[in-house]
Length: 225
Image (cartoon, rainbow, N blue to C red; front, side, top):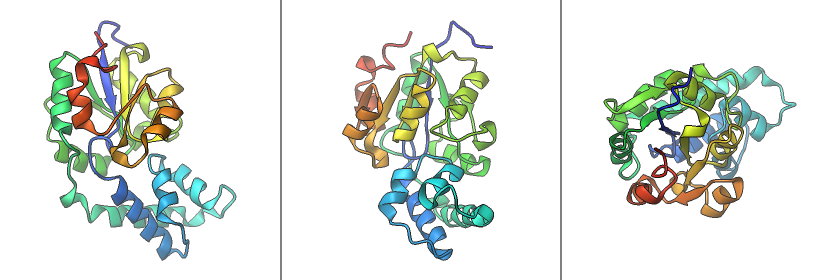
């Protein structure tokens, strides 16, 4: 049940707070290559932000034989795990989370990463003392651009859609937020351009967490309260 007196900020994590979008791209490229699927990295990058099921449909076609999907996901996960110790936060990501908490806002990581990946991402951010709620892929029946993970984040945090802002880096983030009428701030640090994010419906676009932090009082987040 939503707590109508509280406001909050929902954050995507991969590509928004942690510099991992291109690592996922390379990991999927290699996993697909190992299975003799030659998919250009540019196409893969543009699909990052979807869940693995929709990503594979998008890249390989929904009518394909899906028997090998589990092996593709396992290969991606194993390849991506090799980067965990080298993952890094995007500029001033941790400071942005603390600044939101200092404003009295609930800080929610609305990620559809697998639970074992979420642990690695949280370690990189080192901000557990201000993070109110964290989701994972287990909380969503459908992945983005479906809004399931955002609905789960609202439910678990006790926040209402009309009292939050979502921050993401992909058009899939913007689309998911739009289905719940949640304003979405886009960040280009995941590799998607300003015009594309704005065209998808982002209420504002910034380069990275650092630029959003500098503009926080005048941003959609600053208007919460």
